[in-house]
Structure formats: C-alpha cells, structure tokens
Amino acid sequence: MLNKKFLLVYLLLFVSEGLLANKIDAEYVDRFGVPEVNVCKTKFDDKVNYSACLDTVHTSKVRELEIWQKNIVFKLQEVAEINGRRDAITLFKSTSKEFEQFKNKNCKWQYLSMLPDASIAANMSKECHIYMTIQRTNELKQLSQFEFF
Image (cartoon, rainbow, N blue to C red; front, side, top):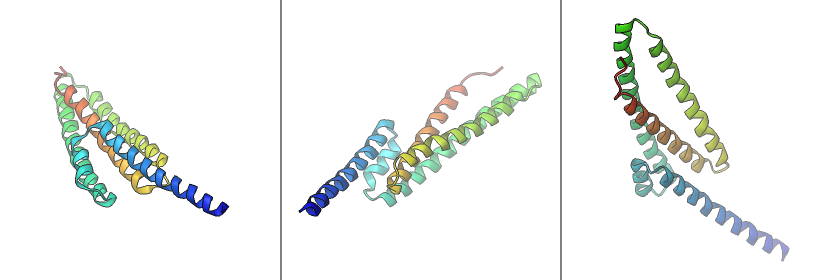
C-alpha cells in the first residue's frame, strides 16, 4: 500500500513537473515576444526540430548584429580619420567581445537552472541568446543614427 502511494505521488510529481517545465518554456518565449521564436514554437511541437529552428533564427540574428557592429566601426573609422584618434574603435571592439562573454554567461546560468531537462535547458539558452542578440542589435541601430563628429 505504501509503495502504491509513493508511486502515485511520484507519478503526479513527474507529470506536474513536465507540465510546469513546458509552461515555463512557453512563458519564456512569450515574455520576450520575438516573432521568429514564436513561429518556431508554433511550427514545431517536438524539441529537436524546435531547437534546430532556434539555431536558424540565432544565426540570422547574429549576422544582423555583425552588420550593425561593422556599421559602428565604419563610423568610428571616419571619425578617426578626422581627429587621428583610434581609441574609440579599440574600445568598441573590446566592448563587443565583452558583450559576447556576458551574453554567454547570462544564458548559461539560465541553462543550468533548467537542468536536469537538458532539452528544455538548451532551448531556453538558445532563446536567451536570440533575445540578447536582438537587444544589442537594437542598441547599435539607435547609436548608428548619431553623427560621431
């Protein structure tokens, strides 16, 4: 009798934990409101294809970020030609590297917090990378509107 109760409680906890993990995963995506991620979420029910879709979105967003980083460097190079100072370029490149390190660490702790379910953890980390890449891109878009000289 005790074993049956234990088994029933364990089964209920296992099922509720799985439902909770899916709820957390869905809230995470909705909280960030990234249309491409939501398309992946809607299009793919299985975690493997959803993960592959997130990889595609991430690659696209990283390319966009790189374009805006190059745009800022180009503007800073124009300024350096006028004033002869290249320290802003050096500092911007350093900041970009530090942002990547911060993004990786920020998304890694979120990954670790979702373990032992590695597939949900991996997808949550990928969503985090996508969101933070979009945030940085938007910041650089705004900055590129300024004239630096």
